[in-house]
Length: 71
Image (cartoon, rainbow, N blue to C red):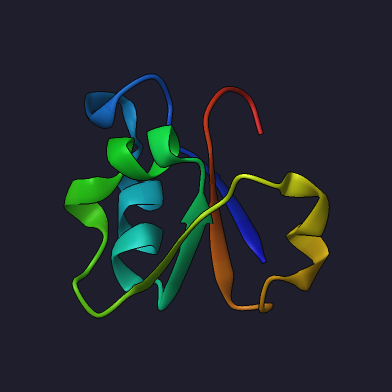
């Protein structure tokens, strides 16, 4: 799993983070984090809205986890 910070808004996502999100096959995060990164998430990407972070260890290893704040 890779954790990517999505900053405070779409204009604050780094180029490297945008590239990793764009190339991801699976993306997970809070609805807010997913909304911030929406323009970089591909249509065929599996997206999971997380409400229970206690099960992070159950996510597939190729998941890109989006985080707001300082990951």
